[in-house]
Length: 183
Image 1 (cartoon, rainbow, N blue to C red):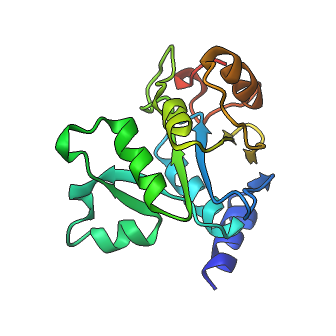
Image 2: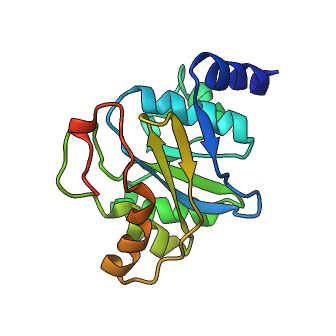
């Protein structure tokens, strides 16, 4: 029922489409979502997740998962992040990957909805440390498409891997193009 409602809103009312998918066989990955220029991107992600029908996740500080909001955040794929014991962010998220059978973590590498000249690199090093592929996901407002690319296994050579990954985002336009990272 919820899936049909998401499809009606996403496809019919909003006029968007989804190109590609996250294959069920890809149990763990980092979903690199760009460009992130608007709060509405969160809802595009929720609709896409509900329509595709595979579990997709995000992480947040563990305090977000306390009463009264904890149940809601977990129900939409959230995972509490415990950075106690001096863990850095990459190690803490890699631990989440290692503790679960299925974990597809969506992350916006811009780190903000404001204009940035370079991407944060944490998403890459999380994928490397957790030994999971990166799946590029483009929110193209000009074409009203959510485009999901093929998984890319990272090698440890950031510059070479990023050339391949960023090619998925060429020509993509965010809701506010003036705020997006230029590929």
